[in-house]
Structures are given as structure tokens and as C-alpha cells.
Length: 627
Image (tube, rainbow, N blue to C red):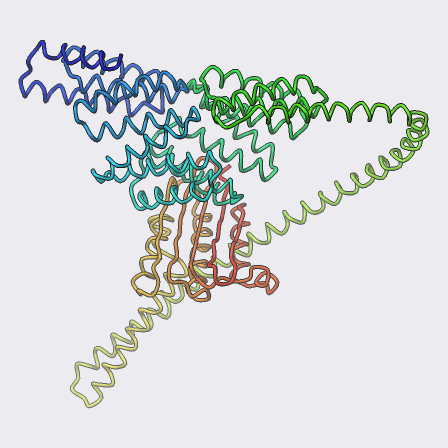
């Protein structure tokens, strides 16, 4: 059918002739429709579909087979976004055939990549891998770096789904290396999400959350709504494994809101399955069952077999745990049937083993019921005794709870008092810095300047001590420069006049001029009006303290400073390759630098986390809430 489709289009085009200038105008109009589709693809699927329809209608009217092929490819990609993988495959295959006939290598590689993503979503990993490799061969010949990175990332996701984390991380790192230093692009978002997911699977939750934060900042910067749900899901999974279940549910709910607006039933199926698992852990059986059933229905509608199998398996476990062995066995059998359609090496023996397991559990239940009847005579005595014990325990717990609440109130008051004292100390310290800076600049600096003027006047006279006077003037010049440097360090003009980003960049630039270390500074999503002047100064002092410590004590040769922000918080990450240190040892010594950074973080109501060990460098993370 697809070859008949190609022949019909070529015949249609052959019926008319076009001048070169007309063809050029047609190309511009096609590019316009395609660009508007790309702009709305992951923001509003209805608007994006309208531009596809306009492109297809225009291309048919103008006899442009290339325009028809681009519209067909775009429709396939949009159906993938909505989770309609079978329809997406049909459209991508038509587009691929047209691009091959036209010998459009770049677009052929794009169609191969899009087709591979659909087969991967359906769990047909062998087909997906073959298509990704074909796409990579073309992109490598054309040296399309972002597209090569996307291919590597897709291959990584195949190995990740096979739980081969080593190979998944290897290909993800190749993708990250290719995009390193490039301006943010749509293709980078999927790579960041994949790498964050790999970190999460390795229980590196803080590293995963850091990449998720950067990914969300990219989404905001590029005005991409669709991909935010992926990051919210990954954040939710990290918090789940950290046993922060309420936070996990919150981020899953944010993902559902986005996926619902795009009609992405596949993503919704995954999220509902995750919510079911959380409520199962919380022992909320009704909610767990509801979300599992929703997941099964959505995944069946899209043909997402892996999602169907996972939700069936989880619901089976829920029923089995809550004494519904028959329903559990039926769902488990259906789950195995779906799994058989995904992987061909599952056998009837495995199903029989699972059935035997259920029968064994039923026998154990019957034996337990018999034991219960035998011991029933003793239950009354045990119950009475238990009531007595529980009454004592309840009284004890109630008293302890009351006592604990009183202690908590006292601790809260103490914390408030300590925070006020900390703020007063820091504000007093900054005022003293400003006072000393003014005195150095206005007092001592002016006296030295006056001395220099006097010496300059004496220098004009022809006396024997002219050389000594010149030397004295040089010493005074050096003193004035040093005083000005000290004054500016105490109260940085760059921070007051131009903001935090400029001040940090200026600070690091001066250090890099010494050519003793390589210090980099990057920022994403941060704007100056997020913090007031006092908060900016505190954050600047933390950066100043951390970088100076890395140079002075850690003997680092490379230092990376990264400042990122979203609508909820500001994140500061400082990493160095220095000799590291024992954190507990430093805390026990009550180091001034660490204490100052902690005090300033407390002032900002933030969290300070330092990861370091000897010979392994240091990572400092500061998270500051914006609400």
C-alpha cells in the first residue's frame, strides 16, 4: 500500500510543471508550516495538528511530494506524543518511503529515528535498535551532532528497558558528551531525562534530581510543556524510593495534568500504575486498585504492552496480598500472556510453576484456618490480656505525645531565636565590612593619595634623594591598589550595581586571570528579581567561601559553579576535583568556613549538602526555596 501511495503522489506531481522561483516560494511556505508545527508540537497538540493539515493541503495543491512527506512524518510524531503508536508507525513508514525516494538523507534519518521510538514504546526492542542504528549511520556521515546524540540516547533507553544499566549509562554518556557545551535544544531534554532516570535506577537520587531540575529549566526556556511530565514522573519516582510518598504523589499529579492536556494515554498509563504502587505500599487498597485498573485500560487503548503487563502484575500482587487468590491468579495469567507476546522465550512450564505457587498458598491458608480453630479457646484470654496491655500502652503513648509536643514547641522557639541571632550576626558582619571598606577607601586611601601628591611635588625638585622618592611613590601606589582591592572584596561593587550573576562571573574571571585553576560558571533559569539584595549577598558569600576553600585547602585544578532555578527553588552546585576531606572530621572541629556557609544558608531558609571524601573531590549543593 505504501508503494501505491508513493506512485499516486508522483503521478499527481507529474501532471504539472513549476518554475524555479515558484518552487522556491513553495519551499519557504512549507518551511513556515513545518516551523509553526515544531513550535506547537509539545505545547498544544490541537494547534500543531492544524498546521500539519495546512501543510498537507498546501503541499498537495502545489504538487510538493517533499511537503506531503514532511506533513506525514509530523503527523506520525504527533500521534506518538498522544500515545497512538500503531497509527504513528503507519505514518512514519509512509514518510520514510517518500524520503528514500527523494534521497533526502537528513529527513530519512529523522524518520528512522521516529519509527524506532514507536517500536521501542511497544516493546519491540530488536526492531527499534535496528532503526536507531540505521539513523545513526546517516547522521554520522552528515556530522549532525544533536541527531547523533539522540540516536545514542535512544539506544541507551533500549538497554535501560532490558535492565542492562552498564550499557545504558555508556550510551547515555556518549550522548551527554556530544551535547556538552551546546545551546539548549529540544533533543537535549530527552537525554537529560534518560540520564536522570539511570541515576535513579542506581540509587543516585540527588544526582537524578539535579538533572531533572536542569531539564525542567530547559523546558521553561524552550517553552516545551509536554516533556515536563517526564521529569515530574522521574522526580516522583526518586521521592518514592526515598520514602517521601506525599511528595511523590504530588509530582505524579503534576505529570497527569500535563499528559491529560496532550491526551497521552501511554504516559497516563505509566503514571497511574506508579500511583497504584504507591497506594499499595501505603496499604490504601481501594485507591491502589482504582489506579491499576485505570492504567490497564489506558495501556490497552494504546497497545502499550509493557504497561499492560506491569499493571496486571502489580494488581495481581495486590489481590494476592489481600486474600483474593482467584482474582490474583487470573490477572497473573493474563500478565504472563501479555509478556509472552513481548518476549518469545516464556514457556508453559513457568505458568504452571506460578499456578503451583498459588495452589500451595491456598493449602497454607487452609492449614492456618485449622490452627485458628484449635487455638480459638485461648483467644479470649489473650484478648483480655491484650486490652489491658494496650490500655497501658495507650496511656503511655498519649503522655509521651503530649510531652513530645511541648518539647517540639520549645525547640521551635529556640530555633526561631537562633535564626534571629544568626541573622543579626550576619547583618552586623556585613555592616562592619561596609564600614571598614569605607574607612579604608575614604580614610587611609585618601591619606596615601595625599602623600603621593606631596612626594610628586618634591620629585620635581632636583635633589639627590629623587630615586628614593620615586620608590616611595611606587610603594604608595601599590598600597592604594591593595586597599582598593580589599575594599571591593568587602563590599563588591559588581553585586550592588549589576546583580549576582555578573558579580559571580566577575569574581571567577579575576581568579581565572591568575591561570592557576580552571573555574567555570553556568546558570540556567535564574533571574535577578528572584532574590532581594541581602539574599544575593549571602549567596555570593557562599560561592566566594566555597571557591576560595577549593583553591586554598582542596588544591583543586578545576572548579565548576552552576546556578539554576525554576518557579519553586534556586539551586547552587559547586564541584571541584580537589583532594577532598572527611566531612564528619571537619564538622567536629567546627570549621569557620563551613559554619559561615551554613549560617548564610540558614539565613536564606535553604538546605546545605556537602558530598566529599578524601582524594575524590567535593560537591556542595545549596537549595533555596522561593516560596
